[in-house]
Image (cartoon, rainbow, N blue to C red; front, side):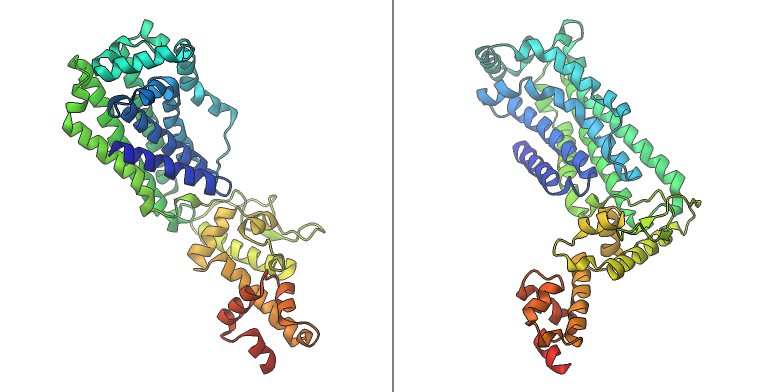
Length: 398
């Protein structure tokens, strides 16, 4: 079961990182968080359950320093959602300090020959109590081994509490006027995420502490109730994203007020950053209206739909509105996919060309291409969906 959950988490994290990190930067932290949690679980499996000398030789120490980044990844993810700012600053470098310190402490063991690491793995697999005899970190020279092992879940728990605190402060500060309050399911997602993580971390921490208190590491596997809670926490943590499919969009915010002005000669429409207004409870609706006006104006005046590469990223660059804000607007307000919205404008352009008599000079396929469609089939399908008739029928009716 632990192996299945670990591999599931690794696959989930890879999907988040590959398909969403560029469009939604906060998913970079979420993917890193899930990857490190799954790596931690896979390390447990490799050392205590797999009975594989090869896996134990790899995971007995080498990647363990990465587990000290689980907490920072969680903190950065929660913060990026609540502030809509995913960029790390110089102050964030100190979050890497525990991982870097522990990595330095591992250097002597990392430099050991592979044969010695295999021998240590065989020693561990023969009897889990032999873990006390394997000195993988310089910390073991002046700190009890239990302290080092407990430090990992303890640090995660501290970061979970810190993340919960900034979430509570955000809720108390924003209240009913929280930006785009229709996305309150994001708050529910964070509560569930932090809840399952706390269950997993607390049960894991107590199990380690009890095993060392009893001077019997085998008790770590015998504490069935704690193992049950640990399994519930890990399972809930990994499957919870399935119930919150829109977690990647973030909590849209905008630092400038919703005012418009005509942009420079290049035709772009920009936000007036010079005017300042105080945020009010109706700011959410104002911002959504602002997005609506700006998108409509951009489509009407700049005709980006005529470009085949016109997508959310293209519109975000054109209007200066973050792509995930646009994604939220079309999903929650327009109740329409951006591609369908864009294709409606393309169909409208094609209709104008037909009414202007261009169908007498050009083929319908050429009109489709001039309207931004990349293929004849896409043009015909979109036209019929919008107008209820094919382009050829519309042509003869005109």
